[in-house]
View 1: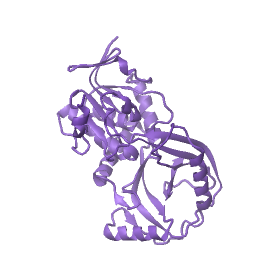
View 2: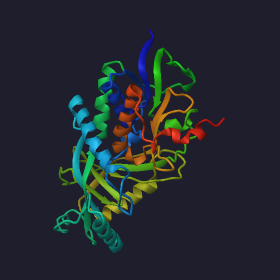
View 3: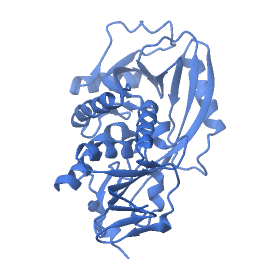
Length: 355
């Protein structure tokens, strides 16, 4: 029996989940194909929406608008799914050198938004070893990615809106008036499949810059249950149930997507010199992030095939970028509104239309 939907979505990470959410809000139907992977980039991510980025401590692109939108979007899903999607918290950013402390104080003087120095720099000495003090970044949002994705997945499975299988691209038929895949007819197909888009003929010429990230999950003795995030090169991020996510690395050269012994040894060396509590690493994993050369996402529709779209290239900022740009795609389909030119995939029209 054939099925007719407005949009066929490929991938149910954060991008695909929020796209489905906003399509539904716009009164549009969808069907998702998602291959069963335990550690996609979304599922392996820390879930941090951090307004400050890099050694220069600069504000993330569009961060005020993205954070404001994220609060509303995650709040909607929280009510809809009855699951805790997001927590407001702070990052305790330990300085590893005197120069890093000076850089933080200078940035604080230039632009104090999101940054502050604690009243008492000794309050974490029972738990950590540190010499140069720390700064505080706040507010920061912690997204509970696994809970969100798993709960949403169960809901759409019950409603028959999901097929857990790897897409056979050879069976996708793209015509000006319709998209057909197996027994499904749709008006649009949108690829939200992370690194899968690197091999799709429609979008493989885009300037992706994938990188490999690794992290571990650890149980740290007597750690407490607060939602505070700690950083000293690596992040220690609370996961609940007495576990902490610790990572991540950025490798631009890699031979596969498997965890490495080098990352594990480096992580243990950092932890031994930093935390005073005993710990046990219970899991070690890796994934490939679909980052981009210019650090801007790929959003919108192919310049020649107007019913073939993409929401990808979110890199490490997926928790903040996914809801904002998923809403833009849904609004573009439903109302014809414009996609932000800095993110619109049509900025690469010459590359995408080259024969």
